[in-house]
Structures are given as C-alpha cells and as structure tokens.
Image: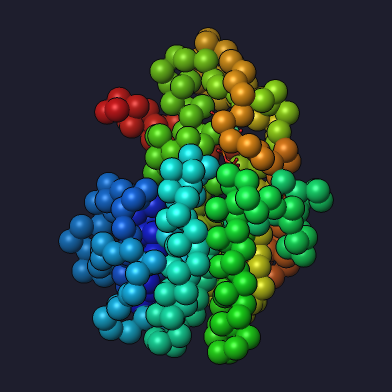
Length: 313
Ligand code: UDP
C-alpha cells in the first residue's frame, strides 16, 4: 500500500509512519509542524519509501501518485496546545477532515479518522462505550477540540453513507510513550520531566480524577488492525486500567525515586473530565485487540526517552 498520514511529525503520526514502513508499505507524511516536530521523523531521512510534505491539510491538498489509505492524524491534541491554537484546531477537524476525505475519495482510498475519548466530554456513563453520545460543553475551552472531532466523525460517516467510502473511526484514549513533547502540558510529560528534575509533581485539583493510560505501541497496533478490518463505526482504543491522577503521580515518584513529592494546583483548564476509562469490548471482539504493555514497562521506556530530552532542554 501507499498510505498518506496527516500529522506525520506528531507523537502518534510518527509512530504510525514507522509501523507502516515496517510492514513494507510506502508512506507519504504530511505536517504543517505547528505542534509536530521533524525530529520525530529524522530517522526516516533518506528512506526511499518515505516522503515528507510540509503542508497544512486545512488548505487544498494535492497528493501526487496513488494512495491506498489516508490516516488523518493532524490536530493539536493536548489541552495546552488546543488552547494555544483554538482556531487551527477547529479548522483541522473540519476543513482538514474535509480535505483528507476528499483526497481519499479522489484516490479511491480507505480513510481512517483519529478521533478521541474527548467526544464523550465529561462523561456521565462509566466506562465509556461507543454508543454513549457524550456530555460536551460546546462553548467551554475544550469545546474547540471536542466539537472539531465530533464534526469530523459526522463528516466521515456522511462520506461513508453518501459516497460508499470505506471509512474507519478510532476513538483514542490517553496514550503515552517516546516522542511526546516535553512541553505539551499533558500529565505524562509534565510528571516525568518534573520527577527527572527532582521537582514536585503538579497535581491539578485534588487528584481524584481518573485516566487510563495506553502505551503507544499497543495503540498503534489497534489502529493498524482497525484499518484492515471491515468495521465502519467508531472503535475505542485505549487501556482500561484506570487510576486516579494522584495514584499516577505517586507511581511516577516511586519509579524515579523522586523525593520532592506532590504539590496541588488549581486545574488549568475548566471542564477537566472527572473520569475516563474505555470500554474495549468492541475492539476485543472485532479486532482481537487488547493492550499488552504493562504500565511499568511502558513508563520505563518513556522515562528513558524523557531523560535524554530533559538533558538537552
Ligand atoms: N494533570 C495534572 N497535572 C499536570 C498535567 C495534567 O494533574 O501537570 C491532570 C489533568 O488535570 C487531567 C489529567 O492529568 O485530569 C490528564 O491530563 P492531560 O493533559 O494529560 O490530558 P486529558 O486527559 O485531560 O486530555
């Protein structure tokens, strides 16, 4: 296959490029580099099966040559990033998804949308199944991301139903691993870099909010399987092992022998979801997928990566 990956220089996009190349496919990677970094792709320089195009998918997009699959991963994705780029976030979820679907349609390619657990908002149902329609504040600070992704899902389903296209939607839950940006503001880079610098970990609120963390290689495997499946409705991919943010902080301090402890700060962003845990029955049944990498192993690899990044920062 020859696949187009938007957001190729991002955390997930770059790991996807690696996976498709490792499977013997050709990859065209697209990124406007507002939150992505070419550092995530520098190991692919000179690879004849990889082509990088610096381009904003929210603008008209022409991709030369055949394309068999389009994976639309371009978007600011951390709360800090989408607060900094609210309009770009709305544009890439709407106009960008429209253009990416247009490329897929023109090339007769499969299309896979990177959606998110944020479509469930601050959920009133726990754990979240794909048929839960969500609880989103349209005008809250997270609305720019949540509504962009909800629109992107609606547009994807409209292209599937109207044009008979092969489309897939993955709802991605919290994911971590090497190539996350040190300053993206999310909990894993924040906690790990604070711990490696011997600083106290900043827990927002009282730390009772929960998240479930999936290691990046597990997530990429779920996405690869979903693309190759014949299922056209959304599928949650994430790790159902849930914990409070306070427990997570204590865990990271223990793993890094950080004596500095924890400080409590006010939540930086209104509308912080209080609980989040994927119901992955659909992925298990349809894709035979479930996460395999333990938090210990995943965090060890992530801490190794951040050790290097903290040194150069
Ligand atoms: N969080 C925290 N301290 C930090 C960064 C994040 O306590 O330094 C909390 C945040 O309030 C949220 C959770 O960790 O409850 C996960 O935040 P993240 O930004 O990683 O992503 P989210 O799951 O909210 O999209």
